[in-house]
Length: 328
Image 1 (cartoon, rainbow, N blue to C red):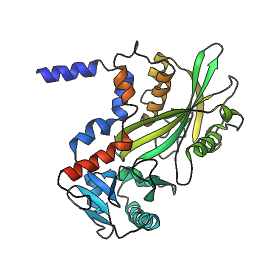
Image 2 (image 1 turned 135 degrees about the vertical axis):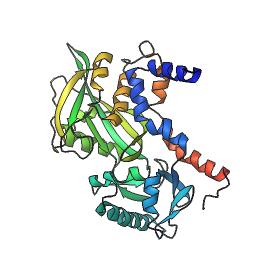
Image 3 (image 1 turned 180 degrees about the vertical axis):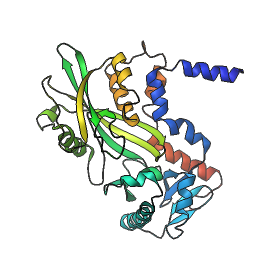
């Protein structure tokens, strides 16, 4: 074994389960980005995503919609506004869905996400949420950690098991409440809407809702690329409250003691990978995971906050520095 292999295996051996998970939900951030195998997805002169080679091949069949270059895929600049861009992309996606080209499109939801570089930017177009991973579009979601200061068990957290019929991650364990930020819905409205639908959280209970920042990560799966930012909320609930689901998307709920050992066990392969960051973040903020029991604590914390808001801007600058003008 040479030095670098020895170093790498030692490096892996000292990873806690939490850190291994952080590497998993950041699989693209840590491994895919370096490979530079994807092309920048450009809309209106701005990079908003990344396109993998398998997707580029299909998009190149629509030269009137997508202009494919060695380093980029550009949405035809002849489409001047939000509606025109959205309609043209949708017609291509619907055709690709009919042809069953990409597994992710089987989950077509007729629910759209906005496409923009940074959260505060004006959206350039909208796209069905099942398709955004084909273009590496930054997604946004809202998560509520429902927790209880239990008289006997101490700090506990509610988890849900996803419905067995859900299109993504069926039957996996998940945060108490989680939902995507779809077109026309604000962060706080989404929190209230999802809270009511998924867990029967009343307006009265939601008065205790506390904003607790965001987590961000960049995951890759067989479905595509997922640069994801979740707006996180903590909600202290009374010990006698039991969440009840109203939209048939949840199998059951369970109250779990928030201890390292317990969460180590619960964040198993039975847990939705992309929901793990929210739980790990909760455990860090409540002092359950700390520098005493997590030797690589700073690394773990950083991997919950990867810089997605500036990521494509940086890539943009590289494209320009490499002698490619933005318009190419």
